[in-house]
Image (cartoon, rainbow, N blue to C red):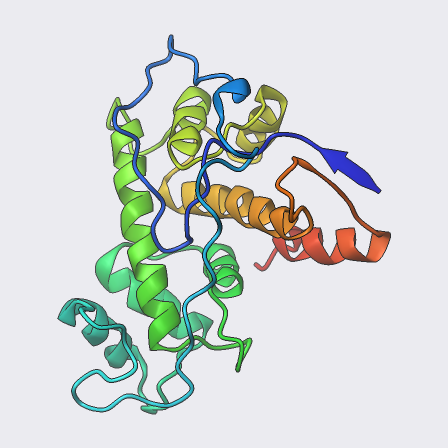
Length: 235
């Protein structure tokens, strides 16, 4: 099965999507795809995921990347009541509530999937938690930047510009499909869910397109394995 389209103006790591030098207004169209450099995915290669911790942490916060904020370590430790060094989806939901908001469990499970620990698919450790927390901070900044009317939601055009700032030049037909899944615009929770689906699917497709040509040939099994984790609803 062959699929093809240009994906993004540049590619960034899950833990650190770039912010644009300036926002786009509703009358300014993103640059055309022919302005991209080196590949359909942009100038930047996709970095390998951060290494995972396989052991619990000590009182000093061992297992977290160097320089991790004490607030992040504290948020993790407060919900890790068994001191195993790992937290499940419900504990992650509680931990993020202390720094961001209470996310829908569907969004939490998508985050768990994208930042999964290779040693335990049902729990994440300090390394994954720190990367996830950092990612949400960047995405929160993007959301607030493009929520121009300060309504707490973003509409179709704001979503287009926000995704483009993160490196994804989404075709209008796909944008319409995305926005149709949410009533009256996207709040931050929905924006994270929507954006992570776009980002995750693009990165998974890139794995099948090592030449960064914008096209790939997938078997039926490969296609289903790639897409289904992003489509299954966890309510």
